[in-house]
Image (tube, rainbow, N blue to C red; front, side, top):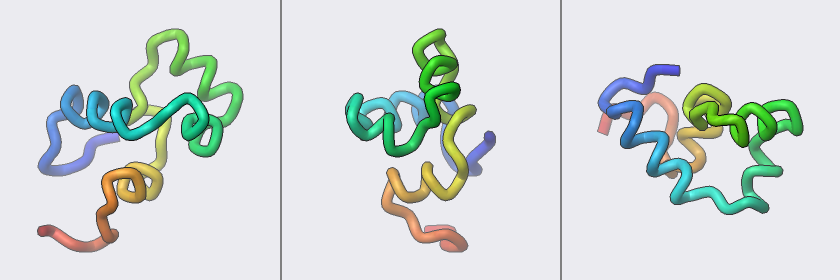
Length: 63
């Protein structure tokens, strides 16, 4: 998933910083967690809404 204004690698690193193992269970299904453990990026697994929530952004703002 492409998020305008963010470098995908930087965004993925930031998401990893924001999530603990416990948090991952809230955001990822067991299948998604398996893919993550196998090397998938969080930006490919999380929804845009989840990413905004983690980054504490309000949908629809361009700030």
